[in-house]
Image (cartoon, rainbow, N blue to C red; front, side, top):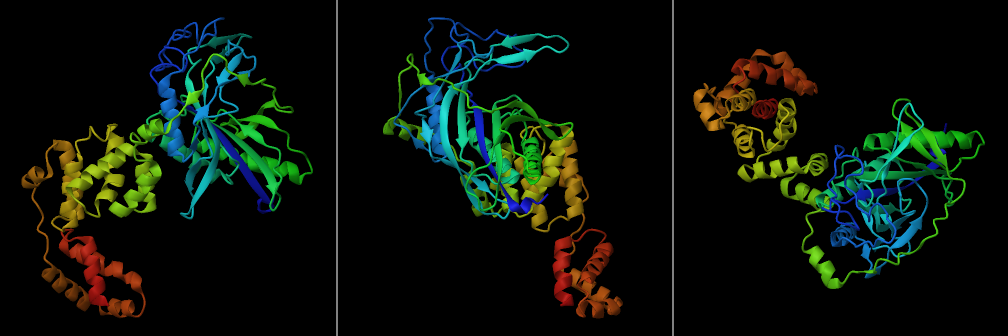
Length: 480
């Protein structure tokens, strides 16, 4: 199989479940859980009784405009709802209220940071508002199906990208950044396992240099970024193999089997469905004025891209470190609070290594940990200033965890090792160089790995009471 001859083309449709208190067209609560009794959070509107009239939830418009602004989209001054007709047991009205012809947002983009550090813009075709359907539950062991309408009427934003994505890496990066955006806006939980953030991925293959798209297959109902990436990789190989063998890729909706690690056919799509769209007669158009947009702009939080740039510029973080903090806003908040107490270069490493490990081991949250931002800042400040050694810093960290006391109190209770002065260290290094003349000659002759030999000798002589980084710099200076 020769992948180099082919180009993958990917477009993604994401359904974002909104965090409104009530559903989109009725007053039924929208904060449901799996423990709710089936068909208990429903009313005559979301159950589609004849003659009922929907009333639009204003917060849905606010959230849609926020999503549009956050993705640099054009916000339509006037948009409309449509009826999308199809029959399915979990859609009691026989149609879904959506926006087909005049969506509320168009022509936006989401930034994707590529593996080489460059940034690519994945263009958006549209963002539109619609209602969710119910849920079919198929009984195992019997030929029965049940319908739970608790989810019916849940407000959704469908975010549709153009086919700009060219790899599984780009697809994951796009979805990850889009989820961070809706979470930062606080309009969606982003929980993929609960279906609050659902992605349908359309994949096709074409030979490099061709402009015409290949036949696309849709990957549906995959609830993690890793599985989406794995499914895309499999599907790329599957389609290339078909083409290499002289076959034809069929337009299908496919599922990812996590056990066999392959995509399987869910249903074929030989013909486009005729949804018989018509303008929704029971809902008025949505009007978005410049004044309304301005009021939403004033409420916008810091978005992931801007936060990434700020973390790198203000704190000197590497792109890798900034990405970790962007992906975990609570950890980022911990870091920024710790930085307010002490701006030292060791803080990031201690947070990402020791603090995160501690929280995982103790199964506690960052805010509940006994290692508060101030306490960790104090420990790393002492290390950064060379007032304590790294081994003692580890002991101090552990004792603070055990005693729940501030570092300065714990230090008074512990026997603080004497920190050797720079002058004493110079005498010690000179003595070790005198005792190992062959190694000195070899180092100066190009065997620079011997630096570790001399540093080890010094640390051994000081019994761990010297700062390793200080010793390394001093030994290097004296050998050179």
